[in-house]
Image (tube, rainbow, N blue to C red; front, side):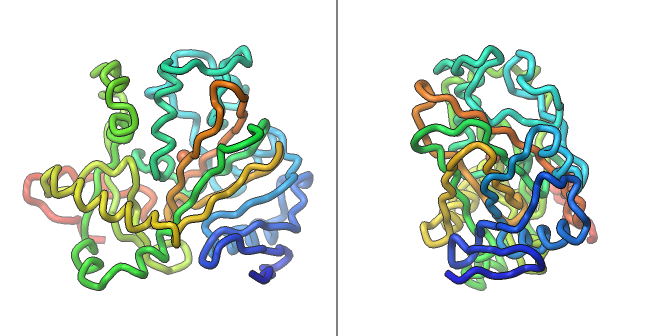
Length: 318
Ligand SMILES: [Fe+2]
């Protein structure tokens, strides 16, 4: 596939419909000039997932660059381990497999099984009423083998749905619940989660069919998607499973390899899904740090009063 030029950026597609490796950005100059940010966002809107080698970014510039894209989430505390963070900046989410002292997270600990949910196809933070638009994952230490991140092109998958399916799902609202994906990923271990913990993280509500930042229609779905408002759990699970399976067929997916520290992968949670793949997590260290950028688009805050639909209500006017 031939490289494409967007402003000062050279974009080398890694898949026929999405994902590109970008060159031409000098991350030592963060904060970047606005024209470069504009080019990067244009590339992001086009490819949904962009990959950058050898950024040279450190924690401070990783956060600063992310904040040029919008305000960033503070690292969530719910459901995670009751231990101090490894990082000084509260905007950095720990996506690695190391404890505070640098040892490997042991199998069967809370943090170990909690991370199993990342192996399901998901979108980051869809369980928040104020959802995220971007995740920016920076490698600090990568395993020798495995640990690729796989992505799915939800826009193209939506385009390819039969019209009758598009009509069926057009106005649906989905409940997204962090605990739902954790229960699916680790049903036995999930039994240790207390009601107090569950109460601390309530579900969020978002429209299923949305218009993405490039004007194309897409779906906001994946592992945290628990049910369709107004539908039974059984009927909801059937549709959600069907749509995730449709979107994650091999023709819509692309696996991104992690080569070395300093590599950055930036994805748009509104128009793609992703999942982690296995590596020898009890043998090798993986240090990955993520910033998560709040959405500021028209669907950023979802449908907060959707629970009323359970009482026979309908979607509030747009
Ligand atoms: Fe994720």
